[in-house]
Picture 1: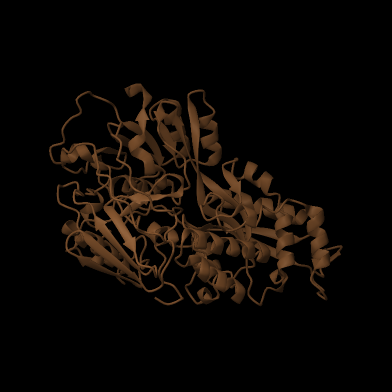
Picture 2: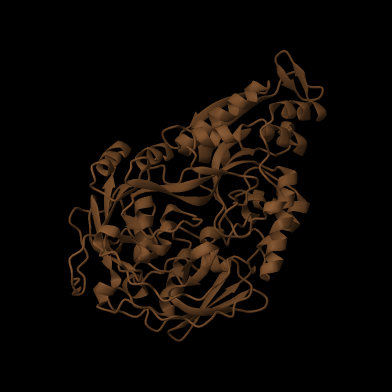
Length: 577
């Protein structure tokens, strides 16, 4: 694996999530399609499922074709990875009983649980893991995570042992191992290019805590996998991992609690207001996918509350740092532009308080964040104007001028249009307002998602943009900021070239002990704050509204809204007691 880094697995990937989920995916599900399950044993006492209203509809419930949020929510419940996210930034075992890593951080070995089963009763084997990874590496595969495991060799040893050899050792590899695994015995004979089209996506068979009992365009009904397989509601406690290099810290998997929920029922809606009405009418216990403002409004009811999961997606102003944009060349100028933005008001307005201020591209909720390395820049328009003047800019009657420039600075700030990303749109409006307030010429141009991402950002044809950058739960900033990543099709769209930063990016992403990784990230964060390579604004929360009868959900950092199901087996409806 080269330093151009094709390895961008799962939450290790740092990609622009600027149009994800914005373009509707045609539903492939036909009404009434359902999976016939193997003689589930009915619960001894009838109990209703937890019901959640979801904005959007599923198209294909498979790790290889889950594009919509509804798809990803279902995949999170139906499929398992080798490991899964645990409390407080930890990672615990899932399909894997235990794992180990060699001193170089390049060789990872996982031992599967001997009781791991697919929901059709077949054993989960190392061949399933190898099959899944090889699909993601296949050049003809174009689904979620396409090419994300390139440069990683996978080997099996018997039915329970799988080994990964990384061309470039990465400290965050364990987070990548949360990748949902698919069943080889059902899909290996399907041509890779057709995996998104087969019936499996409408009749999924996973190894996760819940199985799909029925699925159509309007409703998905899930029941505990233990009922499908007629197994006791227990899982073995694995032996301790001898991994010493991975962060978040690997921990033993505790015994799984009894799944209190009798089932989960998702009801799908196309219109936010219709979903809100269903919640107000008591038809659902929770609602997801709504705007921060609407979520807050529903949560104000006496019987409801909002769950705010700290997100790892950064909303930022990305500046074009290529030589053709001298207005952004000086870090002092970039710092002044950030100082001129009233981010506290921005969070109250565009984000409806459902966000945290960002001091750097590293999320404050991450275990790798160093609070001593920098705090959010305070809003100070007077100081911002003084900093511009100190940097050689001059203020004339028509606005600010660069040194010896006859024409004023006029920044075109791009964003997605309001229909596709209302928060980014409102953020851009607020930024332009604040810059105009101190005399900086700036105007906002909103574009449809395709034009915004493909025609302007990917080609470097922009001055500044407001967009969302997916950082991930183990923040690897190398693809976003490394000098080598400015090549065509790479993720460094701002054109940054900084050898000093490159060394810190390499050091931070590498393997090491807990103390070594924390120190490497602290040094990186200090340079990010000093260099102001982009203008960090906020990390949006992933928020849902639930009734007070829904008990058990615990908030932790998430990379995707579907990550909030990390503790779903502890959820219960108080009325069912």
